[in-house]
Amino acid sequence: MLPQVGSEVIVSCEPARARVVSVSARYITVEWPWSVVDNSSNFRWDGTFALPYGESSPEWVPYRLEPAPSELSAGDVCTVSIPPTRLHVGHCEAYDPPRSLGWAPAPTAGIYVMRPEDSDQEDAGCMLYLGGGDPIRVDPVEAELCPKQAE
Image (cartoon, rainbow, N blue to C red; front, top):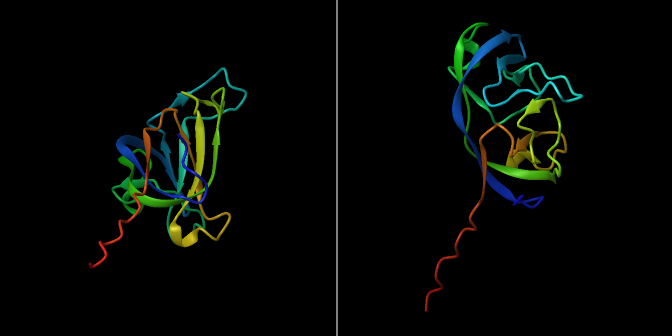
C-alpha cells in the first residue's frame, strides 16, 4: 500500500556492495547493486546510478555511501544503503503493469520523497522506485501518543 501524499514515512534500504565507476566534483557513479539491465526495454540504462554529493551539488538523495564519497575513487568498492530516514511524501504513483525504465525487475510504484524541512520546495527531493530490485522499505511514522490527561 502506497503512503498518502503529505504523510511522513521512515524510508530505509539494506546495504549492498557496489563498485565505483567514476567520481566527479558533484557525482559519484556506482554500478547499481540491486537491478540488472533490461535489454527488452525501450529505455537504455547502463547499470549505473549517479549519486550527488558535496557542497557543489544542489541535488539530494537519501542513499548513503560508506566509506564517504570523498574517500572513494573509480574501481573502489563501497556500500550503498538508506539508513532509516524520516521523509515527507510529495507524490506517489502505482504502475500496473510495472513501469519499464530500462532495468529489471521493473518497479510497481514510485514515491517522491523529501526531507521534512524541505517539504515546501517542489523540487527538493527524489523519486524512489518500489517493488523492483531495490529493497526499499517504507514504513508510516507512528502518530505520537498524547499523554494521559491528569484526572
